[in-house]
Image 1 (cartoon, rainbow, N blue to C red):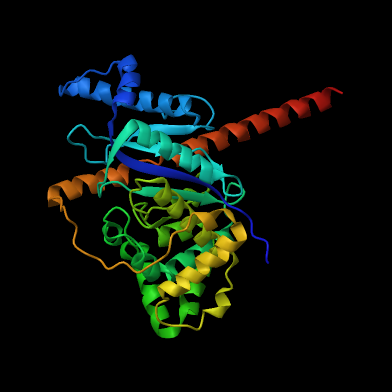
Image 2: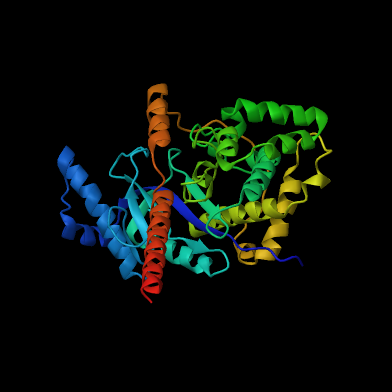
Length: 365
């Protein structure tokens, strides 16, 4: 069985939560008071973040709020203004530390959800989603990015088919082809001339920035390459997964992402370059299974991949609300990407300082 390199990853989980009595005890220490007054409501939100971070830490999952200084080595709790709040439910985001897919990350996700279920009521909402960041050795090479682009575009119809209803047509995690005219044209031509046309087009880009601009001109797409450009944190972000409300769903979408990017990096695209037409769910399932068997850890996490027919949303926000959420999603920064990039910069600065000191010492001797 061929060796595959295990990716690093991080997950951002958008949630709509209401504190249970056990969490209210923590919140009272941070100034929480029952009130609908604007400034007290803001204070209560901050109290919730601090209390939840403390509760997670006491439960064995080291966490802090995102504005705290220090190394990026813990889970984070952050405010998310793009989530619709109501009825005492607060929008927030729980962000993982940098995790290794070769390690026992499944147990860490299980512990997170044990604690969330102990301390919070969680409401499903279409304004919430889940984002999974992946990288190899801290940063993908240009060739690896091109391979991920090829596979994710090729399998796009099959990926859409296995998504829950609300994510098939989500405005804040749209298909990359819906946002890139160049990509759409290359894909349409591949349906006539074979996927080699699409793959050659992707291979034509000379650097990460040009590839990113063509594949994900905005970050509010299914596969976001914006962080993979020089100066970014080096990850590719899968933004299509739905809001998760259980450990099983969280582990599934992480495993799905890890497997697809791993398969992408090792795929022999010459085997499909002459094909036309769209791949089936079975084709996608085979690709995911290939990677899962080699990575190991995702095997226990993956749920069956089945076609899910699209249906109308049960709750349709009005046009003004949709536009507001869409703008907030576009403006929202990735806490995981920012923290990871900051950690990388600090590490690089420390290494440069150490090298400078070593050179000065050598010069004196």
